[in-house]
Length: 172
Image (cartoon, rainbow, N blue to C red):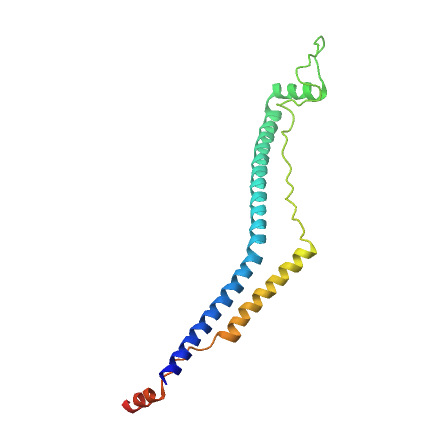
C-alpha cells in the first residue's frame, strides 16, 4: 500500500510541474506578443510629448516677444520708426538706405521669430503577416494557459493508506 502512495505522490509532483510549465510558457508567450509593440509605441509617444513640450516653450517665448512688441508699438515712437523703416522701407528725405541685412533676411526687432512645427511621428502599420503572427501567438498563449488550468489544476489530494485512515477515524 505504501508503494501506491509514493507512486501517486510522484505523479502529483509531475502534474504540478506540468501545470506550472504550461502556465509560465503561456504567460511568457503572451508577454512576448504584447510587451515589445507597446514599448515601441510608448517610446514614440514619449518622444512626441518631449518635442511638443519644446514647441510649446518656443511658442511661449514668441508670445512674450510679441506682447513686448505690442506694448512698444503703443508707447515707443522710436520702435514705431524702426517698424516703418523695416516693413515699409520708409526713409526720411535726404537719407540713403544702406542694406545691413542679407536680402530677404529678417530684422530681429520686427519680424516674428520662427517656431518649429510639430508633426507626430507616424505609426508604421503592421503588415498582414505580422498581424496574423501576433494573433496566432496570442491565441497559442491563451490555449497554453487554458490547458494548464483545465487539465492540470486539480485540488491537491493526499492519498493516505486505508489502514492509516481507519486508525485516524477511530481516534476521533
